[in-house]
Amino acid sequence: MADPVVHLAGVRKSFNVGRPIETEVLHGIDLTLGRGEFCAVMGPSGSGKSTLLNLVGLLDRPSSGALAICGEETTTLDDGAITRLRGHNIGFVFQYHCLMPAFTAQENVMMPMLGNAVFPNAAMAARAADLLDSVGLKPWCDSLAGELSGGQQQRVAVARALAMNPPLVLADEPTGNLDTKSADAVFALLRSVNQAQGTAILFVTHNEALAARCDRIIKVVDGLLVDPH
Image (cartoon, rainbow, N blue to C red; front, side, top):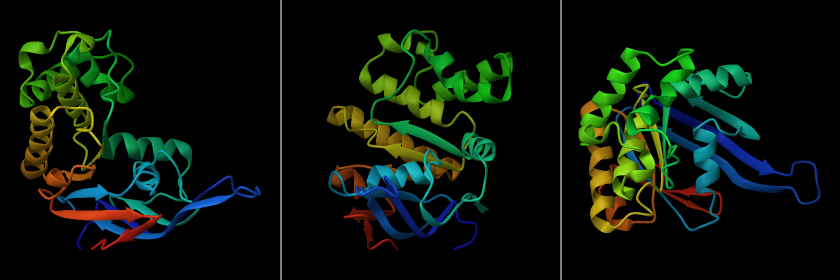
């Protein structure tokens, strides 16, 4: 596979290292995600899905193994380099949208852009407005996030994840708290971004019907991948 966005080789993750309660949660994970691939991640609670996503999202570091994002090996990078790599290459959509309720939808979408500037500027505002328009929320740009419906808030979260035009989006059960109609709309939105922009997406879900609409399904069971290719 040419130019993979994500590549894990022999990745292991343990917690409480060196203590009597040391526990290995991931056991030698090999995984490659290509550009433009839309991949579902499934598995029972406690199987290691969240740990895997945290590693891929550079929110945590593996105990051993190799982990590359957009061709850059990450295990030897310092914290500053990790932060820069994550900020420019990875967008996040969480189950709980994690918006700032006292800020407008537009201001929330601008948040990832502030890492590159001391103060917000007109270009950031225009970019955020365009993204909100693309997710069908142009009329709500100036609405406080806390006043939006659950489905609208999650669409704002998708727009925020795309603020830096990342090649990779990690979606951690983004439809888990939504009704069926809103869940389908959020999934369709992510799929449209994937197809239009070639954004690779890891989509953690318990919804088998949505997973079946992805390009590939990865199952995590007891810290191991089942049929990862």
